[in-house]
Length: 286
Image (spheres, rainbow, N blue to C red):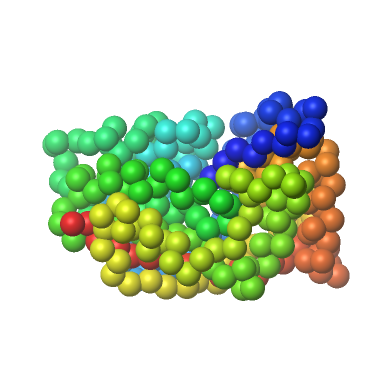
């Protein structure tokens, strides 16, 4: 979700801004991740997730989607090879020694790796695979996803549902105007990592490349709501979508322009509200 932008004309180009990754992961878990709860709920309702569900979550991050599935009675496994700070928070939420919720005890596994690392010959095959990290707002943000799904499919039975998620049309996603900040700061170069509008068939293209058969889709309203502009900026920065812009300019410039972009969405009481629509696709394993 964090592609790389290169800004050739800036003397600071290529220099990675210093980021407190633990603080960023906490901002994600406490501020931003909950914005996708309506998406998780809609998918779980449609697929009747509950007792008997064995879910494999790809790119599980800090584990909120897994926690919601586990609270329904599902046995959940999350894999994430690239975000150890978020995975550490998922462990706090889900593992027996760190949760007081008996519904999740003994029913969760978290793996710092890919789908192959989640293989367990002593357990039944997975009967649901999710890839909830939304695609369709940055050029190249689906790269590698088809390969990840291909690697996960053999761990599930024939016809197992696989859920992909993506941004809806930009005219129905108020946050699109804010995400354009990254592209603006990276001009004149427009490459992998620059903003682009979501396309109608983004999810289907990924599914077909992975050898999956689309079998239904849906749209869900996922408004982004924050207590104030500072919280909104922290939440959006925690996604990593602005990292490349920070490399192309500097973090202070990103903060300034992001704050300005959020201003039109600030309400009289100081809260920030941005209506969005997300789309999900249900595909089936071969």
